[in-house]
Image (cartoon, rainbow, N blue to C red; front, side):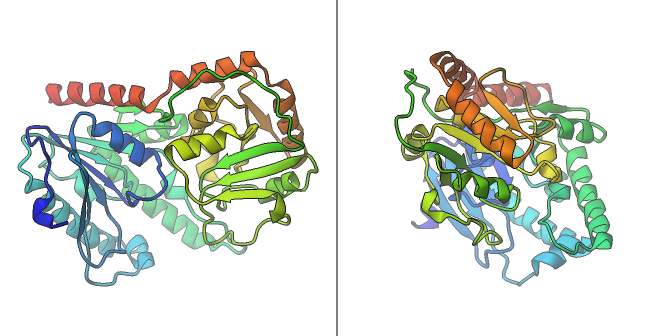
Length: 388
């Protein structure tokens, strides 16, 4: 496509500039789903900010959405950019100039910012936006992979530095949309306009008739990135149970190449979406979220993106003992405290499954769609801009 042909069909709409470090064509996450909701009401520039692109890349997704990946010709090491404040500031200032210059060429009457990048406070300081939103859905300053011999001095330095970046970003926001209650308490010290904004799902809920699985094995499903946040001893215990099999939907990250002792009882899909995803989820009997609660970004979880997708399939969910996770009632979520309890809770959830519980799960899912979240977001934005 010729870049000159890339334009919005209706140029009278306000422009939402969504800044994230995640490529648009990755498996959908909150930033993708929230962006799709914004396109219901606005023109949207989805910005892929990272150090991987040497040249600018522009792509038209549809008449209300354009993806822009600003390039950077020089090679800046990721560790240097993350850990050296001056380099970090210079790189961010460079991206800020490129993003604003690109957005301005569309001559929007109104332009507002939706920033997902916790350490990009430079973009929050810009005066070109009528309104600035920061979206926080993870404990980013404490996110790091496990190491056998951690460097505690480096850990303390990084955590303080990264937290300082986030504090500056939060202070400059007109409002912060925050997924987890623990994070609201933390960020409220720097911005008292923090509100809880929950995720949703994009499936079309349908009436389901409960039927018991007549297969020999209970089909247990997990959807998401398969990485270091999971308790793999629990998963290995599962796949070695004679009456269970595991369906994984999501990519394996680099540090988890050979983790299972029994691959014969695992069905794996790297990436599914829309109807294909819904069909595979419907084949599962029980869903799981065996995250390690000792990891800071797991411990703070109030809710996550996949729970309503699970419930839209009408099936029960077994999770690890996450201390802050939302309570959804009997027959919805089962908490496990150990690998043996995990197996017992899966069997309990499967054996207790009934039409009453199916109807309750579908009711909860119907009340928590991304369309409903989009309506809520539109109200937040229109009210805020009119008050400015």
